[in-house]
Length: 186
Image 1 (tube, one colour):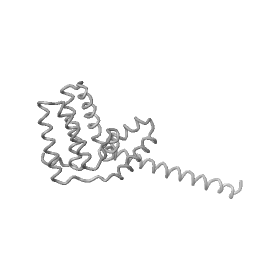
Image 2 (spheres, rainbow, N blue to C red):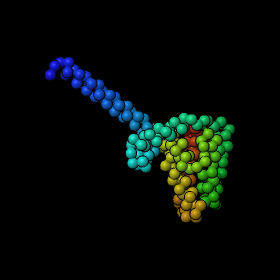
Image 3 (cartoon, helix red, strand yellow):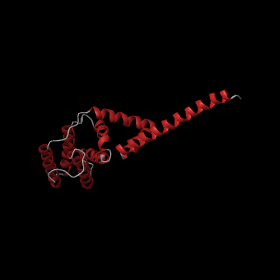
Image 4 (tube, rainbow, N blue to C red):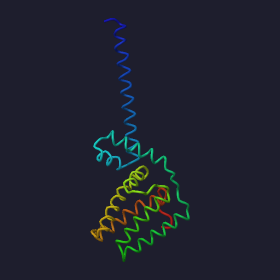
């Protein structure tokens, strides 16, 4: 074989290998970024879809939708009002745990709406929240499930107590605009 023929084979092969390497590195970076951003929600999406590629595409679409939302931090006065309302819901738990859990769900939904999240349906709420709150989302799912059980009078007091703890985790995160440091008025 002539040198020209060898170069005609080797150069395109090197280019293809380089492109594959770059694509692999970029895919790994994207995967790592999504895993860091979504936390446990990343693995849940993979499990739900049965495919990393499909899950990553779904998570990227969630990010795109989330970026289009007009999310706003709460003014201090409004944060304080929500904190007082939460304290009232917690006090209500002693005498009326079912009602308190329902009110906690309502309050979390109201807080989401005040921050700018759409609140039409639970599944979309979860998808929208997953972008910034993927690490506390399992709390919201668990609490919502207990609230559903409670609506059918099937929840135990211990489940209701757990639901309050779960709602509190997301509530605090939403109240502090996703920043660490606890809630106002606590």
